[in-house]
Length: 229
Image 1 (tube, rainbow, N blue to C red):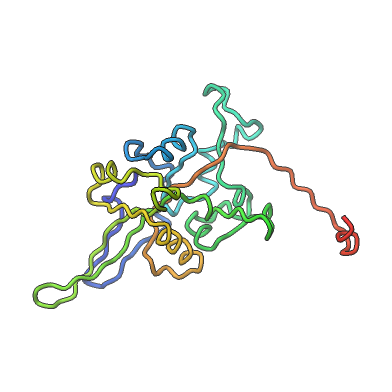
Image 2: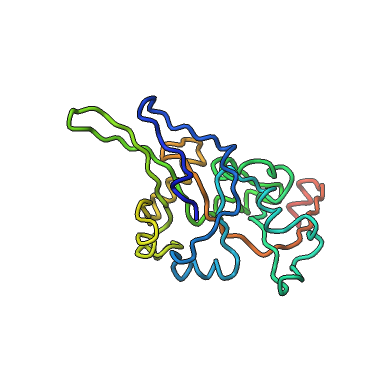
């Protein structure tokens, strides 16, 4: 699990939080299975839960999930026929391979495999996010002080949360777990709009899929023929 010790903190001197996404490339991070609820454990047991820093790239993640040398098969014969994994098909192509997952999620990028009628953006594979937010507080001398804190945000308990709130508090007392569907959606939507007013996303929990092969066929036809099909 990502640690608050590795997350950049705000400087009260210049009142600016400096985070270089190019340095946040660790993937995968360890999943803290002890803090997962029943739904989270089901994803973890099926090897369908991936945690990574926001600066990781699909190319780097797929090198772990589905090594290049094994992309001619769907299962790892050395691991009891374990299925190789992949991120959403929305970014499994060369076009977005070197973007950071933060860029892909925050811009709602899709691949050529998607259409306006089939939106498989990586945004919809996010199950939980860890953010650095900056708060303000006043001292007894009425001086404003800025400080940063780390929060973990995900949907409500009955709407897709992957962590057990009690176990999380025991294991990570200094990282607040917020389970609120509206807030979770707002953080992702603000990111997709490029606003960034909710904070800086440090790490993502993604649900990944079993690997599969995709064949893309393109046919050029006129509008009249299309309407008749």
